[in-house]
Image 1 (cartoon, rainbow, N blue to C red):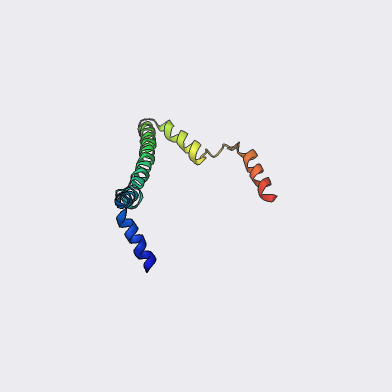
Image 2 (image 1 turned 90 degrees about the vertical axis):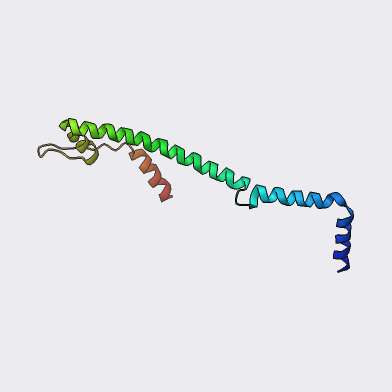
Length: 115
C-alpha cells in the first residue's frame, strides 16, 4: 500500500505528467478505441474503395448485358450465337468439339496434388 501511495504522490508532484497521461489516453482513444476512431475511418475508407470498384465493374457488366439484350431483341442470329457459345447448343446434324486450353494447368495441379 505504501508503494502505491508513494507512486500516487510522485505522480501528483510532477505536474506535467498528468497532462501527458491524459494526452496519451486521448490519442489512444481517438486513434484506436472509439467509435469514430482513426483506425475505423481507414478501415471504412478501404471498404468504400472496394465497393466503388465493384460498382464500376458491375456498371460495365450492365452496359455489356444491355447491348447483348438489344442485339437479341433485334437480331435472331444473336440468340443463336449466344446459345451456341454459352450453352453449346447445336443442330441435330452437327457435332461440337470443345477445345480445352486449360489442360496444361490442370495436369500441373494434378501432378502437384499427387506428390
